[in-house]
Amino acid sequence: MNNLVIFPMLIPVVAGLIMIVFRRQITFQKVLSILSVLGIAGVTAVLINQVANNGIQTIHLGGWEPPFGIVFVGDMFALILVFTTALVSIACLFYAFSSIGSKREKYYFYAFVQFLVAGVIGSFLTGDLFNLFVCFEVMLLASYVLISLGGEKVQLRESLKYVLINVLSSMLFLISAGFLYGAVGTLNMAQIAERVAAVEQGGILTTIAILFLIVFGLKSALFLFFWLPGSYGAPPTAVAALFGALLTKVGIYALFRTFTLMFPHEPAITHTLLGIMAGATMILGGIGAIAYQDIKRIVSYNVIVAVGFIIAGLAIFSTPSIEGAIYYLIHDMVAKALLFLLAGTVIWLTSNAWLKNIGGLIRHFPVLGWTFFLVVLALAGIPPLSGFIGKVLVTQGAISEGSYVLAAIALGSSILVLYSLLKIFKNSFWGEAVMGKEEMMPLKKGMLLPCVFLAFLSLALGLGVEGISGYVTLAAEALMDPSIYIDAVLYNQ
Image (cartoon, rainbow, N blue to C red; front, top):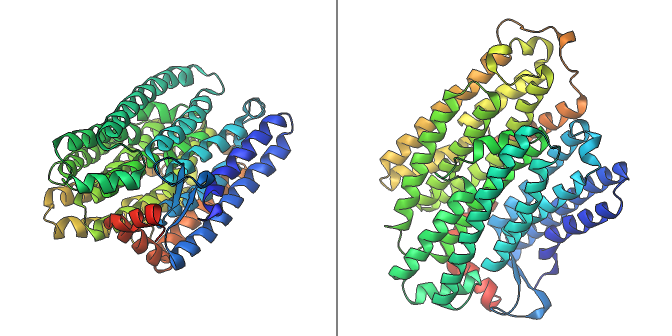
C-alpha cells in the first residue's frame, strides 16, 4: 500500500478549498494554483519511478480490502496521463493569469480549475466504477461552472446543452453500473475483470459492455460528438484549452479501462463496434474541420478527429496499436491545449473568429505564427514532432491486424487535419495584413509564453521519444495483460 497514490487528487482538492476561504486574495490564489499543479507533477514523477521499479502502486483507503473499500490504483497508464495533466494545467493557468479577467477571478475561477483537475486525476486513479462516477461528476460540476462563468449569451446557450447531455450520460452511467453490479456483484474494476473472465463474458455482460460504450462514447465525443463543437467554443480561451486537452481524455481513458481490463473477451463484437465508431468519428470530424471558416469550430472539430484516432488504436487491440494510442494520447493533450491557446490568442488580437476577416499576422507576431505552424505539423503527424510516433504505431498495428479500412481512414484523417489547420495558418498568419498592429489588442507575454512552453513540450516529446518509450511500453503491456492489474489490486503482487 502506498499513501502517495492518493496525493495527486488530494492536492488540488485541498488547494481549491483553501482558495474558497481566501476568495479575495487573488494573488495568493494564483501562487497556490501553480504550487498545486507543480506538487501534482512532483508526486506523480515519484510514483512513475516507483511503478517502473516495483510495479503497480495501490492504496486501500482505511485499510478496507475490495469490494468494501475505496481503492486508488497508480499504474503506468494512469500516471502518465496524470503527469501530462499537470503539465498542461501549468500552461493553461499561466495563460489564465493574463487573460481571464478580474470578474471571473472573483468568482472562484482558480478554485474550480483545481476541482476540475482533481476530478480528472481522480478518474484516472480510481480503481472502482462508483468512484469513477463520483470523480466524473466532480469534474463535470466544475466544468459546468467554468463554461458558464462570465454569463455571456453564447456561454449560457451552450452550457445548457452541455449540462443536459452530461446529465443524461451520467444517468445512463448509473444504470449501466447498476446492471453490472447485479450481474457480477462488485464495482471494483479488478474484481469485475476477474469475474467476467470466469464466466467468459456471455451475452448479458456483452450488452452491459455496449451500454458502457455508449456512456463513455458520449463523454469522450466518440461518434456522439454533436454537443462538443459549440460547447468547447463558448468559454474563455484558458478554459477551452483545459476542456480540449483534458475532458474528452477522461472518457477515452474510461473506454480503455472498460475494453482492455473488464470486457476484453468479445472483441469481435465490442472492438468491431469501437472500430466502426472510431472510423466514423474521424471521417465526420475531418469533414467538420474543413467545412467551417470559424476558427473555434475548426479547432473543436480537430478534437473530435483525435478522439477517433486514439480509439482506433484501442479497436485494433494489439500491443503496437495500444502503444501508439498512448503516445498519441499524451501528444494530443499537449497539442490540443496549445492549439486552443493559439487560436484564442488570434481571436483576442483581432477580436474576430472568422478567417476572411484576418490576415498577415505573422508580420507582426512571428513567434506566434511559427508556433502555430509547429503545432499544425505536430497534429498532422509530421516527423520528428510528437504526433508522428503515435500515427506510425497505430497505422502499423492496423495493417498488421488486417484493419486496412481503419488504417486508410486514419491516414486520410491526417490529411484533413493538415488541410483544416493550414487553412487557419494561411488565412490568419500569411497573405496581406487586414489590420494594422495598432488596431489590434496587445499581445501579452503571459499569453505567448505558455504557448511557447507547450510547443517546446511537443517538440521534446517527438525528439526525446526514447526517453519515454520505456514507460509507454510498460503501460501498454499492462493494458494488454489484465492479470498484472488484477494481481496488484486484489493480491498485492
